[in-house]
Amino acid sequence: MPNPQDWFRFVVHGIPSWDPADWTTRDAAIAAELNPFNIRTFPSRELQPFKDRGGKILSYHGQQDQQITSMNTERWFEHLRSGMNTTFSELDDFVRYFRISGMFHCSGGPGAWKIGQNSGQGLPFDGRYNVLAAIVEWVEQGKAPEFITGTKHLNDSVAAGIEFQRRHCRYVI
Image (tube, rainbow, N blue to C red; front, side, top):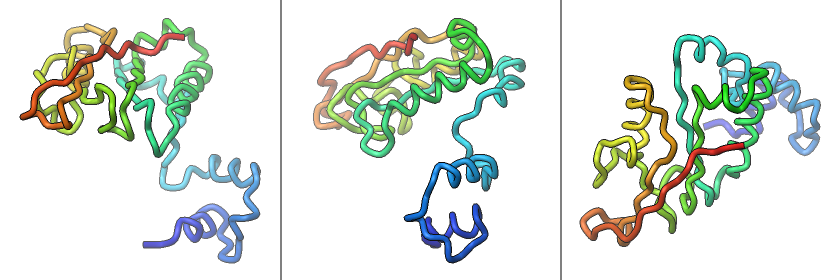
């Protein structure tokens, strides 16, 4: 597996001798412009055709994510709103974002983190408890989710039973 520094040297700069210690905002701008391998994660106007076709996005981020700060998802949400030149209310028609308190990176953590990811074990296939069911209900029935109920099982074991549940409300500006 290539070293990430080598990837950047070759893909972005084409200069094997480039030193990542020399990183500048110019390098960031070059990488963003090139968008190598189509990895851009901050779309804005590019989502207008998706919205126009009736597409829906349900996004969530663990507030105790130890790998990616949850503030990036809020930044993404605002970047999308600004880039599409839309109001929050208009964006809310096709994008819903949920901050999941006590969730690590995608799953796990001390909070009510189980929201249907990881096959939804121990949860009903119901939009109130399961993100997949929530997006299905939104797309197929027009029922946009206002909250997702997270579940914390004792010792994270379905067999041990539910320790507690919490409602995670949609992000509102």
